Image 1 (cartoon, rainbow, N blue to C red):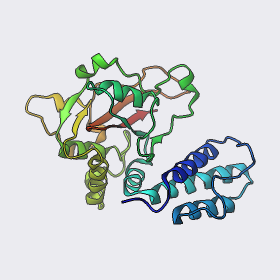
Image 2 (image 1 turned 135 degrees about the vertical axis):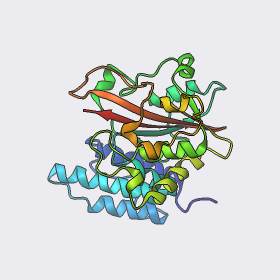
Image 3 (image 1 turned 30 degrees about the vertical axis):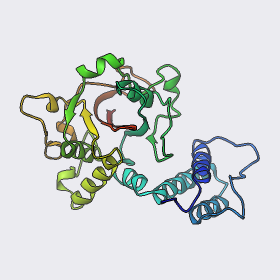
Image 4 (image 1 turned 30 degrees about the horizontal axis):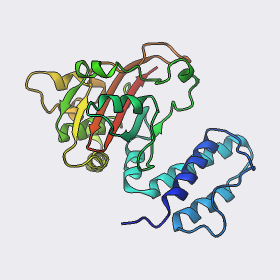
Length: 270
């Protein structure tokens, strides 16, 4: 089914809002893509929101742009809404790229290096996309091994275990006051995680760096029961101390479909 708004217009508005949110000044002042005759309810809603944004003070402008971008993305499609509800409040990386190689580790590395865009133009959660640490470590906060090293750091997961792993990424690594297993909306959390993985198709395969998945007889670790703080893993993050932030733990899930690869990662930092 064709969406009511043209994908090119939606992609342009998303990119425009993200650049504004990053604090860049665009040529032509604040002339957003589109115009008064733009077609599509979501396009018109976003353009009206941009026109209403307060320009000063700058801190207020950036906060309002971020809120508008989040709502725009959530309204664009259910996958975006699930990603934002589940993982937008924690230190996570969520991105999808095209599947181009039989050895999908090459495609995952491309996603970690931000070398490819989402094939559908859907949301990406990447708080480090403008971090100047990437001038020295392009994949920051990742320090992924070469493709040949992936098998030593990853273990296969069944879909139910992969759903549980995504669900606990909604937790904080330290001093989590409400583990996912105790939350009254646990069913909604698990449903959002399943929505994210459904994107990659019924024949998708899942992998994690969690060591529990590699234990004998542990084909389906209980991530929800253990909680994020109870998870140990093979590291995929840099050990460098950058900008006052020490990365000490991580949990990742990789989804491998016929046409796309998804990378979902939670980072522990202090």
